[in-house]
Length: 274
Length: 316
Image 1 (cartoon, chains in turn brown, orange):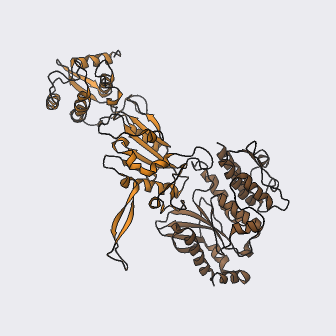
Image 2: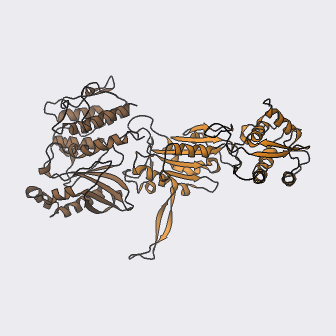
Image 3: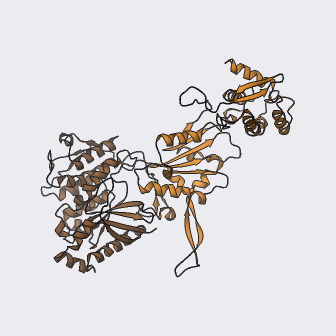
């Protein structure tokens, strides 16, 4: 079956205005314009996930799911205009700093997940998610852990520059294998400057995971910490639930409600405990 | 949900499923319904490769083989479009088909995870590239059922010429018995589908309500005191679906063509009880039964009429 990829007009505007080093990086992969870059993306998506069989792409003014939209959010639809998958783009270097993946995905997903409260499927997404990394900057260990966290959540990932996440982790002395919550805990702690996991604490004997608020604050967040927290916390939660852990939310519940991303996480944990 | 409703014919198993779907507000586009029968096969259920003539392009006129999706594959695709939406695969009359053959390898998918983030997904996958080929959510050819795909079936307990379901298949479903007990309308004031039936008892015409008639028949059929055929041959309230605004003559015609046929061929011919008969001694074959009822003559035995009397006095 043939599919088409739809992105927001805002993304088109941003890609049109790309200059300098980023544009040079595109040339290195054979794309001299943003349209050729999109062709390259589609080629890589189709190579990695042949079932996608994307035959065209377009940019549209208003693409929304459950009222959620974002510059970096795209959709995959079939010939009958049925929505089948979500796509998130990690933008070129000048657009982002350290929040790679979390900052593009969670502004939208934190609006979708609460809509799935009654769903029998206990996942944060109701359709498959594809992540397309257009960011040409050298991937740091921290970014690689973010991407690894996405794969723990079942996100499908492609890098237009063909960089190998596992190699990046290994070259930074991090074991890329995540078979358990303890593996993931070690990985997250390793990329933190202090060597401490600031997102969650694992009690393997008591089979309890405690979510921490060290990097969060009560009230309005002016930064993107909730998105960074959400990525690590959801990934840890997925692993914890599959290993039969229960969740300790006492610390998190001391925060007042009002942040879309954190509220969605708290409600999702409640759903998994039912 | 993986559930089979079972019971005597006409007890309202399909009605129960419909009522449930309506109460849940499930749109028809999320319901896939199929009726099993002896010729229904794996290819009908899952899909099959069928030849197609290419209509345009350089290969115009050539033959290609396309996978024509069966109802199972269509339901699976629908459920993976959005896993937050419940999709129902309704399998009517399951015992009339060979379930082991129809389900084939898919049988393995009926085991679902009971805990964890994968709760409700199949515990084990089966490799089937044809089923998986158009489902983006399945990254390769490994097929699993998602938690929002519900499989609901119906099974008649009294069917003849049916296939036996093996225990391994049966244990993968919850079973809910739909009894022969009559149901009332939504206000709880009157029985549903309850028309007057006129029977001649040898001396006069006697009007019996359908709910009473089938109730007495079930006792007569199942009890060791009379035909002793157990529960399997009983009938339900909707064994005949009467048109409530039709005439008594129309109702009589329905009784003649549906009920009498069943009672003669499926009930009486299965009973080995000597000395106890449902029908009057003057009835020697189906033709005489059919004609006698048509002519308003006595068709049931005195023993059966005694049972009707006792039923009406609440002492059967």
